[in-house]
Image (cartoon, rainbow over the protein chains, first blue to last red):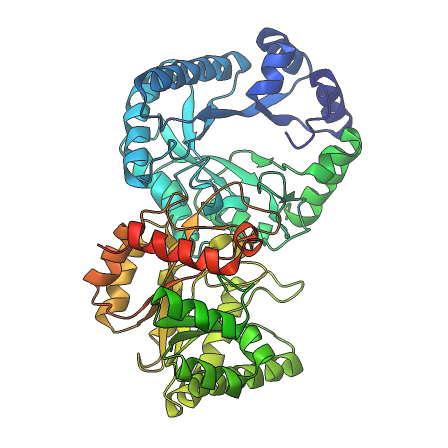
Length: 266
Length: 266
C-alpha cells in the first residue's frame, strides 16, 4: 500500500531492481490483479509475501452483517494461504452505528476469533490483531492498545492469534514496550510494521502516515523492543500518505528503502 | 470556548438567561476583554469561574524558551486567582522541534511542576494536568493518558497538582475508569470536562469535538466514574467545533444546556 500506484507486475519488478525480497500485500490490489495471478507473479519474482492485510471488521451486531463478515474473513484466510503467507492482519472494526459500547464490541471480536482461529490454523495462517491508534476507536478499530490486543489474543493459542505491532499506532504509549515483551514471550508478535508520525493530520486522519525519519517516532527504539522480545520476522513499512501516492511509485519505493537503511537497519 | 463567538458581556448575559451559574474561561478571551474587567463582570453577574484554561507548554529544552513558559504560567496562576477560580488547567506541551524523546519531555514537565505547584498553592490555585488524546502527543501534549498524568501529579501534594478528566481525551481507554478511581481517592480530580467523539475528524484534528449526544461517548457512564470516585465539583462542557462556532452563540449555549440535561443529568 505504500506504493499502491504501482501495478502488481510493476511492484514485483521494482522490488527486484532494489533487491527487496519480501513484500506485504493488501487484499484489494491482489483481488484486482487476480489471486492466482498474484500468487504466480510473486513466486516467479522470488518474492516472499510477509503478511496479507486485512481481515477483521468483526464488531457488527446485526446477524446478517456478522455472517457476511465471517464469510469474508474465511475468504481472507484462504487468500493468505494461496499467497503463501502465514499471517493475516486484522483490523477489528469500529462501533456499530448508534452503539457506544466499546466493551461489547471487543467481546464480539473475541467470539469471532474463536471461530476464525481454528479455520486459519488448518490452513497454516495465523491471525494478527492490530491495535490501531485511539483516534480510530469509534469508526475503524475498537482495539486501541497492545494490552487490549493481547487480552484478546491470549484467549486463543499463539499459533492461531497474535498481534501486529505498528509504530504509527503505539508510539505514544509508554506501556507498549512492556506489552511487546509480553507478546514476544508468548510468541505472539506476528508482524512488526513501521510508519512515522507526522502532523498536522489530514482530514479523516487516514492518509497522513509519515515517511520513515520524517516524524516523531524513534524507529530504532521500537525495533529494539521487538528484537529484545525475540522477534526475528520481517519488518514491514506501511505508509498511507497522499503525498507519497501522488509521486512516481518506483521513486517512492527507492526512497523508502533508503530511509529504512538510514533509520532502521543497525 | 464552546461559544467563543460570544463576547464576555454576551456570555455573562446568556448564562443569566439560561440559569447557568458556573463558567469555565480561557485565557485569550479573558485577556482580550481585560482581566480585571472580566473578574468584575463575572462577579456582578453572579457567575462562578470553574477553571481557567490553560497554562502548560512546559516541554521546551531551550533555556530562554523554558524561562518564558515558566513566566507565562506564573501569570496564568495570577489570572486564575484574580478570576476567583481555584483551578488552572495545564496542557503540557508537545515534543520540541526535532526531538523524539517523550520520556524526557514528560520529565521536564515534572521539573516545571515542582516550581509552579508551590507558587500556585500560595495563591489558592491548584494545577490540573490534562491528558490529551494520543493524537496530540507529538505537537500539543506528551501526556496522553490519565495514568501518565497521575504518575506526574503524584510527585506533588494533591492541593498543588491533580488532573483534568475530559471525556473527549480518555473515552477510548479501558484503563481510564480505574485511573479515575485512583485520582479520586487521592483528591486529585480537579475538573471534569465533557465533549463527545464524532468522526470524520477535521484537518488538524483540533476543532471536531462533538456536541453532547452526537457521538460515541457514553457521557453518563463517565459521569458515573467520577461520581463514584468522589468528585462533586462542576461538570464543564468544552467543545471546539467549527460548526458550532459558525452558529449563533446564544442558540448554541441553549442547545448545549439542553443536551446536558438530556445526556448527563440523571
